[in-house]
Image 1 (cartoon, rainbow over the protein chains, first blue to last red):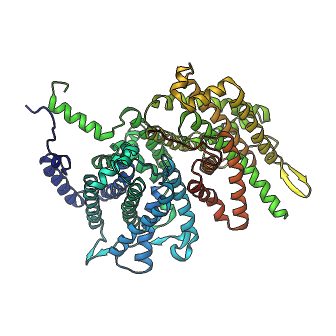
Image 2: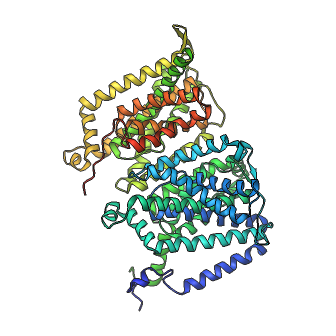
Length: 348
Length: 290
């Protein structure tokens, strides 16, 4: 009888997945997602696109908050700089979209160097404060730098054409987002398995101990911050393309909170958690609206008038309730379910 | 020269409001070791309650201020009891995230309880203008600066002489030893949340007196943040002084450089402060023992 999940070699500890069926199920999921654009209607497809884009951003923040244990309240700033990096390069200077995506990663990475270098020297919550400040400063900077960013008027962004393939249609754009999301997922999973990822986690768990083991705290924290900003910037570029228009209004502060809610709901420090959290958080406002509209049309009307406020309230509530009652997030629920399934009828 | 003095006075007045809210941050940090990201939202709620009282019950200044203080005490106690106390003993990361969640909830509740339009808080005083040597000063501006100075003195005396104040300092310095001495940490935390809510709420009411109430008022909390970083997160008096400095800097930058700089000046200052004196002007340097 199987009594537990034992790891007997170092190789098993750093394996990408711990049992072969996971590969099978993942392949089935990817296949389903590939078919999805032809089955779903336009409304459902828009949710799929949003989920995939949000997933890229959440995985980016997960490197910083989940792996390294640093809070950033200003990741919307990196989404914004990423979107502008792409829009300026592609729409304004007519460079190819692939260069645009590279720029969408590099511009936020540079911004994160400027913010991170002074604030990561310090312990504790200072990064939360400086990133919060950054997300407000960057709005002012973008509005003032009219020669580059058109100020408040924003920049229109067309759907890209990469290597002769056009991503004009929604279905094709979904594939672009899907490919990016899968790439990001593998990238973050592999970062976690590497020496660098282990250093991040060591810093999160006990920074003094990590330092004693020879981890350069400042360098690794900065690396986590820059990597996270790079990935978030790519998500920003995709979001900008999806909106087909980039301006400051399109990236409200709420997105920063949404990203943190995703990580907490999913389970901090786990890529699977970021994926599960994204699906739940993106669908949560819609699901709540559906439930309420069953009761009365008045509730439904309230959702359309105060959509933004209700959304933020839901996020806030979800953050508090999960931290209070299920701090390990959905991943924790999933692990408990698996254990109960395997050991039933015994407790453990 | 007159322009400069005018900027100076309005800077001190807005700085005094930042200072009050910053003291709210510092009171909670000092006794619980938490940065309360919902401070600006609490300030806003208290100001809105004061406005409701002034329009429904009575516009009398004493009634309104008494109601505001009572409301602030209740708000602080309820938040501490319902939201924060269950998180006692959890990691700082989780508790801070809870205050962020709380901030978002309070912020959007404004639109449901009240509405999204700006309102003026009118209690009959505060908008009059006194002329001092050719320079016009609003009475509300004089009142807020005086209140800040009085509160600074009162809080200094409270922490220095009163038994409760000493107990709060003891919990901040070493909560386990404080527990052994028979000090109830939960009582100290409840007191800190109530006090912080009142001090910041006073700032909010003064802001509503001189400017307007609106759902964007929570940004006062963001503006007061630099003040408490500058003064030192664990320095209550220092945060009050920090508020005055931030208000001055912001107004001078806005008056002489550009209006965009006014919004950014405080945040730019945080980054400079964190590079040079991360524990603030008056804060204690954190020494860690392994």
